[in-house]
Image (cartoon, rainbow, N blue to C red; front, side):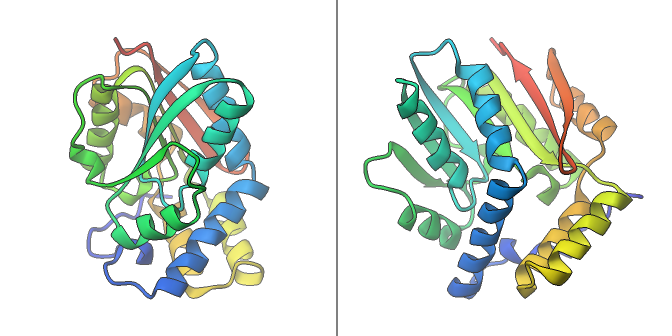
Length: 233
């Protein structure tokens, strides 16, 4: 199954001037998928690994979408007695507005509109960089640049979780969006996401292109994978 990526065929959620209610429904569907298909647990388990020895940390979340991962990470930090500041970055202003409205005022989460390929932050200005279910939105060259940018910002670890392309994965997503999550945007984007995602070998090659000198990769349940660059200093 070859990767089907084209700049001329974007996911609907990446388009400008979307219907606000349709976009919100799509973002809520993605949060639902994270909650019920392990995405939330995967991110928190990964955070526990890379931030376990930190009493406080600064974290950038690339392509934050609905902001559910930053909100859950902030809760995890509070539960574990850690101080954290999270900068949630997305290029889509409408998406950021929806995410911000869903975020409690007492959480130290700051939403920033920026291109994650060229973020406005200084070298090694944060401890950790996370990116979840976003790399497949980009070309190979841009995906490698995002990994390179994460390594530039993080003094400790960069962690990326994404889908893993395959026929079984596509069949599962097709069934899910045919009978359960049936909104047009979710149906279109979810099916396209699997076809645009990377295999494990391709993701590891992207890390090499991004000059990641030391990293580990693992397959995760529900057709996901993770790649982590630790101790980037």
